[in-house]
Image 1: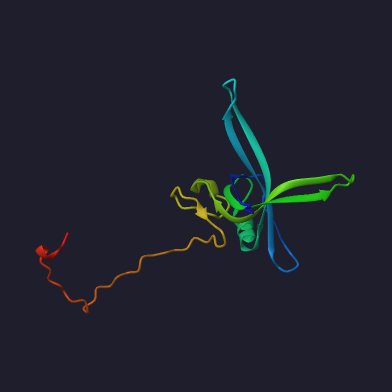
Image 2 (image 1 turned 135 degrees about the vertical axis):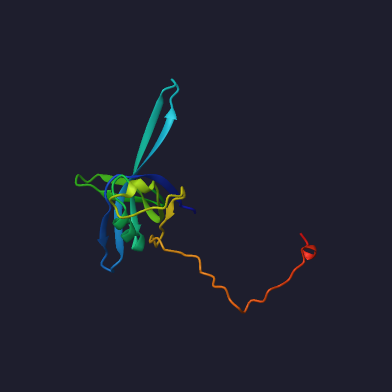
Length: 159
């Protein structure tokens, strides 16, 4: 069986971080996705779906640190059915998503308050386990006296 779901939407509430007795982090929040469509009469309509999402481990700590209500994210995970009995004895259930990977979406201007600054390229920032933006620099090449000069005639080049 295959259980995989990908959602893009905005967070409906600030993440809530808790720790399990074994020390593992759990972070819960919700996401709202919307779909715009045209009705048969030609008018436009919109359908909104609210889904609870749960992060575990390092991803939970990253979500708690960088996400807040209203942030746009992409989550990938598995669908889970939660079942319980309410106070009146009735059986209740709801679907939720256990997140395996997330990507923070949005522009650089969307993150003025959260301490998270995204690059200005249009690609979303991946943050499955490590969301820290690393400072990668090209290695500097120093001229060396050990490299011999090669005299190649242009007629010898095959292209």
